[in-house]
Image (cartoon, rainbow, N blue to C red; front, top):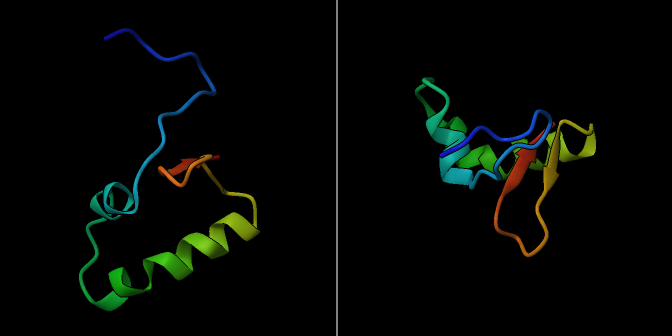
Length: 56
């Protein structure tokens, strides 16, 4: 697979986002709320069709 153009990232599902973090505890239950907050502050953008999120 070739490299993606700089600035273009593959969309991640909620499960893929959760897998990137090592923390333990109940935070994973709040992941949808955390993602909503990141969208509100412009750090995450939802992909059309609800297939994931792109980190900004």
